[in-house]
Length: 247
Image 1 (cartoon, one colour):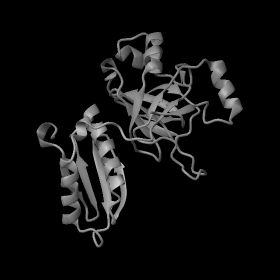
Image 2: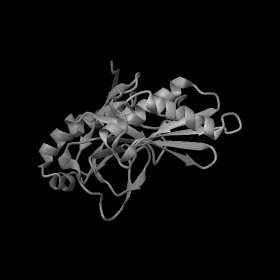
Image 3: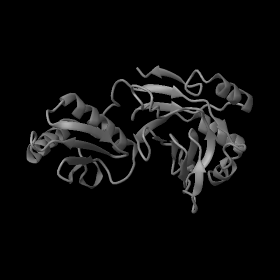
Image 4: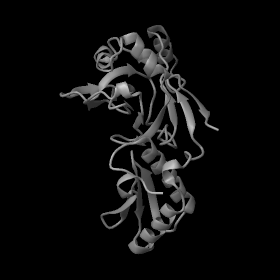
């Protein structure tokens, strides 16, 4: 089954890449398709495919054209596309649900009130909404291991800022366009800083440095300043986060 505007589409990316696009913008079915299709490509284990990744609405393959010619890989992708309705495919197996304690508002997350106003909510209502939201890691990008998560309720389709915040700290939870970003490193951003966590998305010293995976689900339950300080003082867990498999 094809999506709107005759998607999926296959596009060459240089001499060693192919991109399978499921839409020209983020939608829930297109993101689900990208995740499921990447998992299916991984399961095929085609010799010559060196790497795969998924974005908001596409799947990327990097391959060795000396071992797997462009035309042959394209034909294989067309057959795999035709084998299922990827827009209705279930999420891939092996995903996890993370709950990451979050301190909303205050000096550590100073743009909660502004973001809440744009979303038509009070600060208390915003904290309740954002804490309850069970979001999916739509993709990783911008910095190693850094997740884009969504989608939030429609009233959180708020614009990015017109100016850039020079820097937010690692663990900052920012919001715009119905999505969260959880910052892996201190970074500039045009998104509004609404919460602060002690969670580490990227751990260079670890055998597996990326904590989250595309397709994982994440909640950001609110904690008090006292609870947040206890998490910081403990330092033995990843920001007080809990994780469980999704079955």
